[in-house]
Amino acid sequence: MKKLASLLLFIGASVLYAQQKTHTVQPKETIYGISKTYNISQEALYKANPIIEKEGLHPGDILIIPGGKGNQTATPPAKETVTSTPTDQKQTPYEDDFYLYITIEPKENFYHLTRTYHVTEEKLRQLNPVQLKDGLKVGDIIRLPKPHVKTPPKQGSTATVKVPAGSHLVVKGETLYTIARNNKITVDDLYAQNPVLQTSELQEGMLISLPKKSGTVTIQEQTINYVVQGGDSAYDIIKRYSTSLDQLLALNPSLIDGLKAGMTLKIPLQAGAKITKFAEPGKVKRVNDNEINLVLMLPFELDNPAKIKNSEAMQFFSGAKIALNRLSKAGKSVHVKVIDTKGASTTMQSILSSHSFEKVDAIIGPLQSQNIMEVADFLNNSGIAIVSPFANEDLLNSYDNVLVANPREEFIADQIIEEIQKTFAGEQVYLIADNDHQDLANYTKKQLEKLSKANVIIVDSPSKIVQPNEKIGDVEYFTPITTVLISDNSTLGRQYLDKLKTFNKDNLKAYGIKAVDIYDVYNPDNAKNIDAFREFGFVFSTARLINTRDTEVKSVIKDFQDAYCSFPNRYEQLGYDVVYDIVDRMNSRGDVLNNLSSENTRLASKFAYKKTGNNKAYVNDSSRLVRLPKK
Image (cartoon, rainbow, N blue to C red; front, side):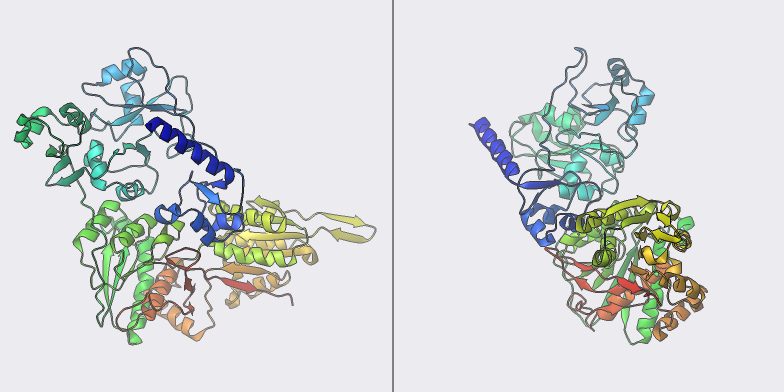
């Protein structure tokens, strides 16, 4: 009967996929970009795929595209196959294009592994640096090279790796917290299931096991408290948790009467175990008093003096101090607490567990999206705002207490895409982008091809732009072209202007996405460059622009020069703008979440927070569009 039910479920799922148009999520894709690609609203996409609001967007996810029919992008999951193995070799639980994966059994040793799989001990340790750091441990999954494979994947690459069922391959930026949350298990489950995690930190490329059932273990007082399940045997428990019968009996004398379902066993952790207890979410409630209390959570890494001075966090903090000084002079009384997050997940959980947040009105930081998510989860329904100054990934959109201050680059690109559409007449379009902006260039190319049917070429240097011309008699004819620089690299910006000057200006439309120094319309020393751009009717969009002719801006810049003897750099500007804007919005009781309706322009940034589609977070989607009309 169970097999019949499974078969019916599989058939039902197949029918569903056959009737719906789907999209397989690629690395670095976003809800915003996918909605633009299919010309649907973000709200419709969320409604058709409610799971992404809860768990976020991940490469490989298959999304239903509302309004479409026929499966055009999704592929059915590959069937699991069992490969034959030598008679003296243990059955491998899984394999991919490059590796075999095995689970270490009791009494396994390096000699047997090297003989059975024809590999050296040195190679084994190289492929499994964490798991084999302290020798072989029962229950750990290790990988072995497949015979006749000469080219292994690059470090960090997961494109060709097929993760075994019940396992998880750790990718860059993941933490124990995010892995547990995304798989609906607890961090204690991960510690108990993977003895290697008790003594070693999580690392990119590790393959860890996921429990079949969550909630059967808790870790207290350096022991695993395990609730015995029906069908368990002492041997299974000893093997699963890398312990011994003697250790079990020492901690559980009642075992002498036999193992019974429902009883709780104490199981020892590994020698030298370092367990981080994760903060319990949803318990904090903001105190609505007559104070403004602000916390800055930044990764200063104070224990590493070499990194402190020039770090992004310290530059951001330098700008924040100028903002707070000016707010104080304007009559705002602000209590500020600064916390060094150091960037590590274990540090973040220690912070959340050991600090009191009831009197906090807003937290600015941390800088990494995964850490922001941990703070947002912990402070869920607290009434405390968490402001993300840098990170702006879609994953943050599902938190109703998060403010995403840094506009997505796609917002900036959309303004220029709309400008090109207005006057597009079939010209060849060139996008010039450096390595740091290839993703944004690909997004722009895709949108222009879809919306304007444009022929778009991406190049990495202005020297590769070509404007064909033909001379008939005494008249020279030039082919119209459109150019777009997608970069904030000032050297590339100067090269771009120099190249534009060689083209026929009557057959050229020139644009910029993001800003470089020579776009600065407020700098009197840049007047000649601005005049040159006016020859083409140049238009550019940017998230940051400093109007140095404005009286208030001049005053802010003077404060920076008096304090640091320099003009504020990008991160100092952001530190000033985010902190000033958040505190300036707060009323006398520190409430900011109910004061987000206004649009404010600060030193370099503009802030207009709103919710888009099914987003719960408040997202700043503001950018500046600057036109330099022809004279």
